[in-house]
Image (cartoon, rainbow, N blue to C red):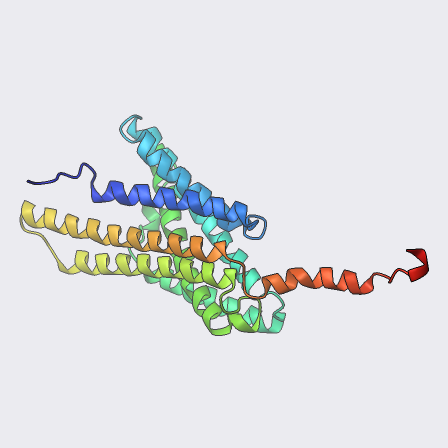
Length: 272
């Protein structure tokens, strides 16, 4: 007897990703972390919206408007992703002197831009136009891809800096900021690895038949699914870590109450 499973791997990963994002949003709101990490929360919301658009509109909408929606969402996600990097950099290294963080920031951004310049194909700028809707969509898609790649590079660099120096500032061991950054850098590093492996395969492997081509496409799908599985694991990591208070949070919350009780004047016995 053979049991049939009516769902594909992609559908299962989609469902787990969307469910994990909803649970994470509930945790962020329930633990009052939305105000602390507004851009991180916005990134989760936009990602969940993109997943909904993908499943609700694909096949039910004309290709051109659907492509425009996906490209706009991709640009929005890339922009918010860069703001997330800035948000956690400021959170993690709050209190650092300008003489300390400015050279590091310039150096890390320059290194990321240098890698971006040599990573992947770039179009011939003489052939770039802005005349037709297709040309505009192409430039917007290129901007989304390159901004997303820059975000991943900066996220990996930020994760390394937080692990090495975060405990000296505001991203100590087991802090929410450190754990979120570790998760972000893990996802970014995984996606960079997938892209790098795929580029190497595309340059070295040249299919000579339809079967070899389909096998190559299947390998690319497995790499993407592996990245999605890592993202789901990171979602679970965030949900568990953010559900609990940071070390010392209870003591910090009790400190003002203790100070108020010590500052309150003692009631004389005669007044009782």
